[in-house]
Image (cartoon, rainbow, N blue to C red; front, side, top):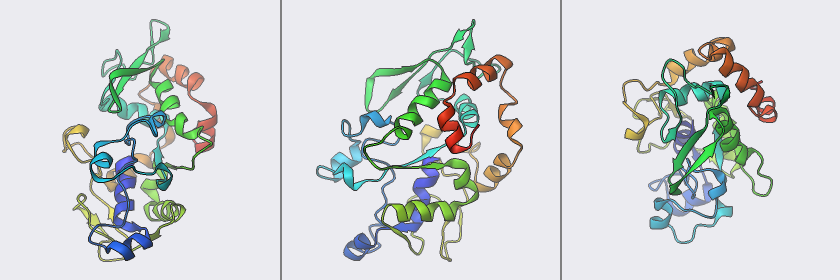
Length: 254
């Protein structure tokens, strides 16, 4: 979700003042991640800077950046983590994933992040990780940010992109070709739709299984019961009990 939103913004959203000053050659002024890194928990804001910002910018002002976070249905997110867990580790097998409960107790998970590779962050279960990672953004009250449902981004890419863009002080501009997404639609019109997979780089696994826009439409058009069909009864009951009810209700995931 973060890759799709970043590409849509980079292709279509521009900060007018930047374009006037630098022209379109250097892009529209959209960053592909926040200064503390898109994968790192929000707690690292102001405490860690990714290499791109350290190399190319001098003392980036955090108040100049508006985080745009893509959130996903917790059951779909956990299913995705079973396919590609990245640095998250917990005892499970493909046949019993996400294995939220083991021997009647929460099955702890831990993950390493680029902000501090020496210390892994622990959560009580994969469901608690969803609560915790997204909750750090959801519960933020001091600094402005935007949270977008991945499902809305799939079905309403132009409308969502425009709202996020204008919220950040930008405006939709003639599509700008960036480093990725050579399989696209609308490049000759007023909006660039990301048709191919938005996932790039070896960190996202093999390229062949990655899905594009049409696959996403089919997947997320299925009845909601499908999202929990592969969960065991114990996992489903545990998730219903422990997933953050406020966030689920707020984003329509209840």
